[in-house]
Image (cartoon, rainbow, N blue to C red; front, side):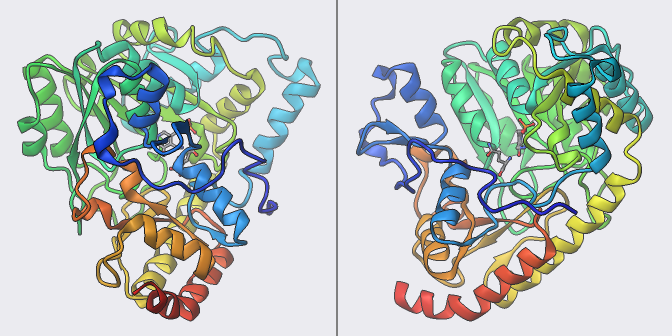
Length: 444
Ligand code: PMP
Ligand code: GLN
């Protein structure tokens, strides 16, 4: 296993200060320029300086480096993905006879990758996709999410999502000129309240953003929950974008196995699904993703996507196609390691007096800090990185911040990543046990 140096994931950043969350009273959003709206939408606008900050993930990694803390913040693994995939990509770059070469691949993606995605979906979920028209390769899931939101959220409309939510949903919805409306996922189980979702639908709603398995709660939506969301979309003439980047990382004690949105009958009329190689193969920096769905919807997403990046690196696409064709046992080994990491993290956090959930999938658990302190998640994370030497993410950064209530549960949850080597998790838990009580006393 190759272990990376702690500095690998970040270089000097124009602004790596951990900033306070924006204050709600100074947001005349409708009069702001687009860059401000995007930044406000992702909680990356510093109202004091009027500047854009890095994302919460980058700020946390920078703070971890500054304080020499163990980084359970940003969701990247601290070990490499399968060696043979690294070699396949490297060979494709240096020996064009063994791969697609180094010039522009087709904008919608290398045919071999689109075929591998379609075949993978057929094999695992019995979903039938035409690789030529129903699979679109993107630069990471991030670009697919961006293109889908821009394609389907008309200006002036509302976009619904369960929150906490992935940060880019807020930014891109704002860029689209739409408004993100969050429906909270509540602990301790963080199951989606589909009635509350439907109650939030108005005549202005255009799009629902789903994410299953969910970041940061690890919730795997049940077939019934998905079926009901599809039904809402059909009845109210809405589109659905379903982000499934953690679909290969579901644990064996999840209440139900993962169900992709396109496996729900009728979903293809309204939904596109997003996938990514980053999490499936522990290769988060490769940024190879894809959009799947009925040809007409995928074509509409292409209308945006082809002017975002046009295309992305052929060598990575080539190697990901090989991984999808045959993972050589990587998925099973990876999921077992992650599940053991989750258990280790869960017990360590519980022993430290936090109230963690037991994620069903993915990279993260969320822990309620209210049993220990009432300072809120942002201040708790500042203390944790500076005084305990462990970095974690304040979940309020992943909410519709400008409307949030400080007493709300979503202002008191902290996300810890377990996609790290077990030694890293163990060392972080030792630090919590040794240093947290005194740090909390100082906070009081
Ligand atoms: N969606 C979610 C829920 C994520 O956690 C992430 C981070 N991997 C992404 C999208 C972005 O994926 P990618 O790195 O493939 O752009
Ligand atoms: N998906 C990763 C996380 O949730 C972060 C990706 C990013 O830094 N943009 O931590």
